[in-house]
Length: 263
Image 1 (tube, rainbow, N blue to C red):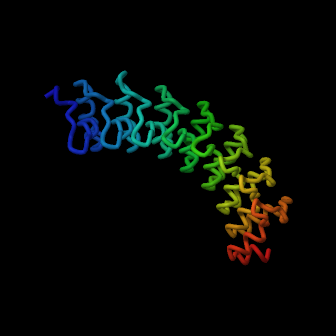
Image 2 (cartoon, rainbow, N blue to C red):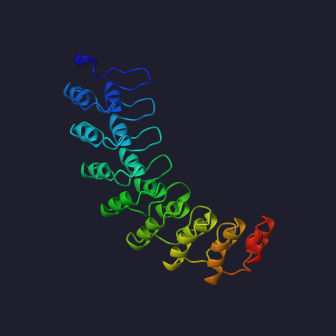
Image 3 (cartoon, rainbow, N blue to C red):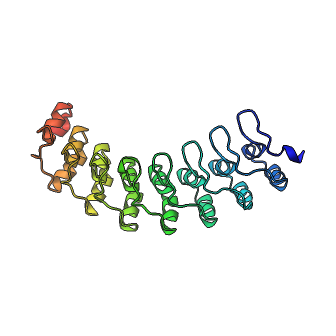
């Protein structure tokens, strides 16, 4: 019966959710034609549009967006919009579709992350290119003041790091709440190629964290020998002391990183 189109099933989903889960285009068309509510949320807070995006079902996303009442910026339990899902999944076509239909490009999730943050975290360079071309603001700071560049450096996504600094003019020396720069994060993870490109693009190798650690301190402490060597080659101070009076050599010794100590 048409009055049953908004029936909620066990598990909290609507018939529309169910039709999308089954990728049943005819059922989705039928339900929408009978005025099914496109904004009902399931147990995870996901709307049908969230589901269609999550599952890379562009034709179904288009059907949903054909309804004027569909809320394009609805948020799920993690405060993700459909655009966050498209960014995380590297789905360039749905990203373009959502932006064409007016999705909020800088909307933040429960961690203060924009779709650009999420795309950087998951290494989705194709989506980042689209977001940048549509005016995404990569200077926005999420939880603990992490920017998109911090995520890209931490995860070692070299292409995205270059793109953010060269094209989007991201702050190469921006600091997180605890004072870490993208170079600190790359050094901590031993992301040698990212560290090298950050230095080439003007990263300050002498910046210290809240605990007065330089990038060399964190590279030495985590035993990343080649990254430590790179920093020293670029005049990092091997005698610099952190808040506890420890040098990079002290930290490498404490942690038993013999190769780094010998270097």
